[in-house]
Image (cartoon, rainbow, N blue to C red; front, top):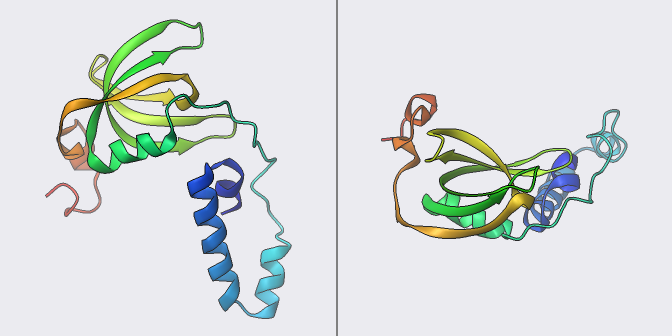
Length: 146
């Protein structure tokens, strides 16, 4: 929870704080003390993430709706590329946030730093993520890809 609180955006930070408060409310006094003074921490806080041109809420919406996105991506060398991707997940790393997506151009799963997304526009149709290579077999829940 502390990791999410340190590295998540406003939506996740709020959810982590709410969950932590609910957990704390049912703990014994000894367990509450351990919660407030843990022996292990998530590591140094990095609240100075680069700004995102595309709001994370927009990416979450595309993931939930299983909507294909047309993105403009700027790589480390400042090269611009346009891609069509199927967003699968948002990831929160120590110094960056990433969008995990199936890239139609590369025909592979790729990680896109969210601060390098210049734009993201809905594609022309949606489909189940289960149709992407490797997703149906990787699902531990048969209902997801049924």
